[in-house]
Amino acid sequence: MTCGPSRRNEKGMTHASSPSARPLRVTRAQAPLSGSIRVPGDKSISHRALMFASLARGETHITGLLEGEDVLRTAAAMRALGADVTQNAPGDWRVSGLGIGKLREPSDVLDMGNSGTAARLLSGILASHGMVSVMTGDASLRRRPMKRVMDPLAGTGATFMAREGGRLPMAIAGLAEPRPLDYRLPVASAQVKSAVLLAGLNAQGQTRVEEPVATRDHTENMLRHFGAHVKVEETPQGGRVIVLQGRPDLVARDVVVPGDPSSAAFPIVAALLVPGADIVISTVGLNPLRTGLFITLQEMGAQLEVTNVRTEGGELVGDLHVRASSLKGVTVPADRAPSMIDEYPILAVAAAYASGVSRFCGVEELRVKESDRLAATVALLENNGVKTAVEGDDLVVYGTDNAIPGGGVVQTHMDHRLAMSASVLGLVAQNPVEIDDTAFIDTSFPGYLQLMNSLGAGFAL
Image 1 (cartoon, one colour):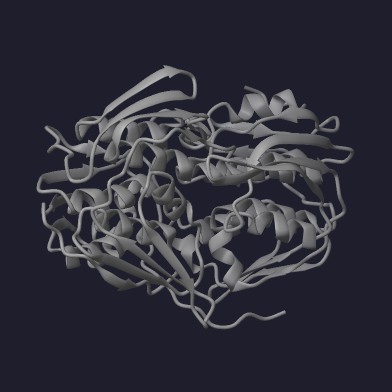
Image 2: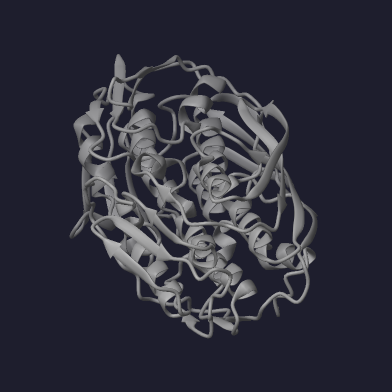
């Protein structure tokens, strides 16, 4: 059970706490989880829908938009750049865009809150407009590295100024006539790829991006949806080359946002682990570059059935039927990491409850998420009696065969996915689990605790 070598990235561990922390004590579930639910809209698609609608001519109608804090920060930023962004009803939004290259200079600093996706993607837009802008974020985001987008985007001719290590706050002096880019990603990153493609929208000629491993392709799908010409080719090494023709005439198109598979991961794993559980999650995104977790859980023995598969807004969606299962350890190859990078903390909880040993290969990207998720995931498990090891860029989890001791305190480091993972662990641990803060769950999954309680989780709110 071994993995090949992989490369490391910049890292930034967060130690701060929420100014208004909401701790939670989770005890073992007293009854099976049951019922049918729908999780909030896909966060990746929600960010992109707002950005592309603002760059398109005309009015775009967006339904199913995730209204977590991260996405609301993107809505506020696009509004500050001149787009007319309006909420009609919960999840129902309209955006009147200005067209490629016509966004206006913001009158104030753009505060991206906790969202690294919003900050990195927006950097590509700001670098390719003739304006000066400044971005900042909360304590967690200000510790996360932005150099990975600054370096390629500087090739457009834009100028960047940031704190040491390329950290926010960051000032960008963009160009109205940016140069097209030809960039090979050093590591797989959908955010960096998307930032380069967004910069290429306002550049004359072709922008070319080569990625070593295929990453989520929501940006390419949405570019096509709004009328851009995008060509994608596979490389002999298993990567992809994406070529975008600059200065397309993006035209408003309605967008239906499917349920977020990363959010669905938490009730899925909870249902797999809680004895007797049987739930259905409807209208979940099934983009093939986002379903690594589902494949891995099925390899572990999960009773996870996909039904009613269909296409909505250019993306595959389906319903998931999940039943309690006996899981076994598994080795996850490094080339699967881009399709499930956000799901490793909750997968680690599943592996901790399973029988046997699991190895997650090439997970170095976890070090530069909302927290150092690799270190924080290890701490989450170790503090609750689960043995782990970090070997290079691999995470090894020693399963307890349905007997996680629990009884520990989980430090979430302002990371929503760690908080949700800890809550699921608490539902099956032998002793109560204390979570220091659940406030940041709302950044990606508003109403998570209440939704889980509708299935019978019994979280004490």
